[in-house]
Amino acid sequence: MQRGKAAVQHYQSAGLDMLRVLQSGMGDNILTNKPQRKENAAPDRCEFQEEMAGHIVDQLRRAYDALLHEPVPDHLSRLLDDLSEAEDKS
Amino acid sequence: MSSQAVRQGLISFLPNLRAFAIALCGDADRADDLVQDTMLKAWNSLDTFQEGTNLRAWLFTILRNTYFSDCRRRRREVPDDDGEYVAQLCVPPSQHGALDAKDMLKALGRLTDDQREALILVGAEGFAYEEAAAICNCAVGTIKSRVNRARHRLSELLGIDAAQDFGPEPATEAVLLRMAAKAG
Image (cartoon, rainbow over the protein chains, first blue to last red):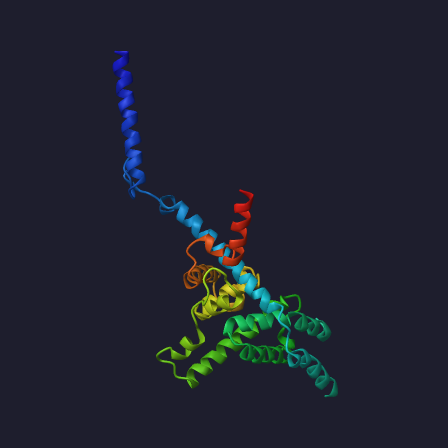
C-alpha cells in the first residue's frame, strides 16, 4: 500500500515537472492557464540589450569628450569681452 | 547673479555649448554660428535668467531652441523632399571594430533630431532626465523613451551585434594573441 502511494506521488511530481518544462517553452502558464509575464520570457535578452546600451553610452561619452577638448575658436572666446566692452561704452 | 558671475558661467560652459552644437548639427562652422547666436541671446536676455536656477540648462535651452528655429528656416529655404540633403550629411560607419569619434558623430547624424538631442543631453552631458525634459520642453517619460530608442538605433547603425565589437582593434588583438601564445 505504502509503495503504491509513493509511486503515485512520484508520477504526480514527474508530471508537474514535465508541465513546467513545457511551460518554459510556451507563452502561457499551463498550470494556472495565465499568460506568462514578458520579462520572465526573455530575461537574457533584456540584460544583453542593457549591456549593449551601456557600451554605446560609453562610446558616445568618449566621442563627446573629444569634442569638449577641441580648442574654442578665438572669435567665440573674445565675444564676451567685446560685449562687455560695448556695454561699458554705452 | 551679477553680470560678472554670468559672464564667468558663459565662459566656463563655452566648450560644452560648442560640443553640444557640433553633436546636434554635425558641422563645426554651423555649430560656431549657433554658439555665437546663443551667447548673444543669453547676453541680451540676462534679465530673464532667474537667479538660483541652472545656468547650464538655461544656456542649453537657448542653444537647442536656436538650432530648431534654424532647422525650420533651412527646411523652408532648401526643399528636401527626397531627403538628398540629409543623405549627404550622413555616411555609414567606415570602419568595423575600432569605433572612433567620427563614426559615432556620423551615426548620431542619422538619428532623428529629438532622439539625438535627448541622447546627447542625458548620455553625454549628464543632465538628469528631469533637466533634459525641461530643456526640451517635453515630459520626462518622453525623454526616457527617446534616449532608449536612440541607444538601440545607434547600436544598429554602428553594426554592433555583440559586446566583442567593442574589443581591441585588430592590431592590438594580434599583439595580445601573440603574447598569449608565448605565455602558453
